[in-house]
Structures are given as C-alpha cells and as structure tokens.
Length: 325
Image 1 (spheres, rainbow, N blue to C red):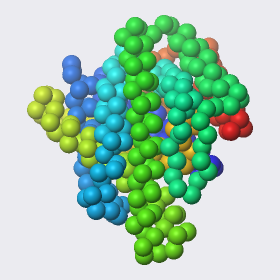
Image 2: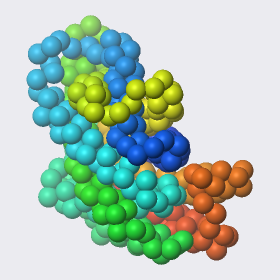
Image 3: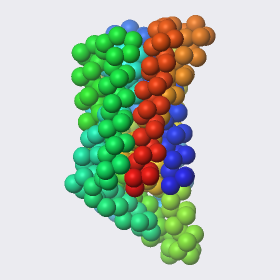
Image 4: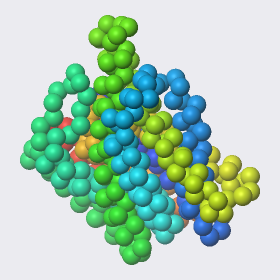
C-alpha cells in the first residue's frame, strides 16, 4: 500500500502542473484553443506511446483482444472527461477545478458498493462495499469540495456543469483503467513465468504493466486525435511546441496513476488524487507571488486559507479510508 500511496501522490503533483499548463495554453491562444490542445496533446502522447510500447509489451497480437473492452472504455470515457475539464479550466482557475474533481470519489464509492474492485493475481481479493469509516472519508472529501465552491466567489454555471460531467465520465474511465492494468499485468506475468521464476515474473509484471497500459491507452487516443487534426485549426509550429508541456505532464501523471490504481484500486487511488487540491493551491499561490496573475488571479489571504483548509480536509480522507479498510 505504501508504494501505491507514493505513486498516487506523484500522479497528483503531475496533474496539478498539467492544469496550469492547460490554463496557460487556452489563455494564450485564440478561440478553439481547448480543442487544439486536446488534439495536439494526444498526438504528442501517441508519439510517446510508440516510443515506450516496444520496451514494455510482452504479448502477441492475440493478447490484445481480452483487453479491448477495458481499453476502449477507459480511453473514450477519458477523452470525453478531458474535453469537459478543458471547458471548466477556460471558465475558472486551476486551484478551484482541481479540488472539485474530488467528487469523482462519490461516483466510484457507489460503484464499489455494488461491484468488486479490479485486482491483480497475487493480491488480496477486495470485498464489495465500503466500511462505515471509509464512507466517512468519502463524505469528508465532498464536504471539502462544496466548501471550495464558496471560496473566491461562486463558480459559473458552465464551469460547474463541466466539472460535474467530467467527474462522472472520469470515474467510469478510472474503473476501466484499473481493469486494464490488472489484465495487462496478469498477461505479462503469464508470459514471463515461462522464462523466469514466479516471484521475478510477478515483480517485473507489476513494474511493466502501468507503462504498457498507459502506452496502449494513449496510442489509441492518439489515433482518434489524428482523425480530428484537420478540424483542430492547429497549423503553426508554436501550437505544437506550446502543447508539449501539457502532453509531457499528463503522460507522466498517467503512468503513475495507472501504477497507483493497479496497486491500491480506483477508490483509494482517487482519494489520494484529492491531494492535487492542496498542491494546486500552493502552486497557484506561488504563481501569484511571482506575478503570473494571467494564470492564477489574486484572491487574498483569507481565500487562500479557506481553500487550503478544504484541500487538507480532502487529504485527511485518505487516512480515514485506509484505516477503515
């Protein structure tokens, strides 16, 4: 569990940096910037995936077939959620969007109440449902998210609608990501067990699976993005260059997130992701201090303290969930 928590925190940090890169891009460019970033960023990640995949894939073409359902669902739900997130970031600052994504936990908690969470061979089987203390942690995250809505003025309706919709489809994607990682790990472990001991095969498969699952997902999304490139309006070289920070930060975040989901499951993994709220608040305050008000506007010390308190409240849910388990 310790390694799962560490990878979850690293993923949250990378995502916080990615939200800043998103707001920078959409504010720097003209109308249609969100669409451009979504297309160009995924084309870049498709290139990253082509580079990574030959080093981590240990199966044949036929081994992809059992993974297709989870792969397609994870990718398509993610793309829809990503577009909703870009709309939200166009209408409000990252330090508010990031913590409010904690509402994903409610959706995932409900799913976990009726379905067995995905897991890999050699790990304890998860039970269906959550304990009372785990539900307290879930509710705590949502209380903090509601509190954030009243820090620094009310959110626009478009931003609220985009965030809620993103939470739902992201949750569906996260569940399928966990299924995909477990499927890839089990497949790689079976392949490696033919040439090395079971213990070595399990460790190597656990390390390779998140990289492999991430590369498969973003190779697929890259192919989809290629189809939308003619309509993206991105023609100049600067647009490609400006999309690189977002693509690099998100791809790295996803590798650690897939690793986290494979180790501790999507519910606790998403509670860990709530720490990006604290990280986004601290990074946003640093940007204000450095004078980058076009990315993160100044709100005053009181708003900062309220947002930070709500972010810490969300992060405290990790303790309750872990202890409750």
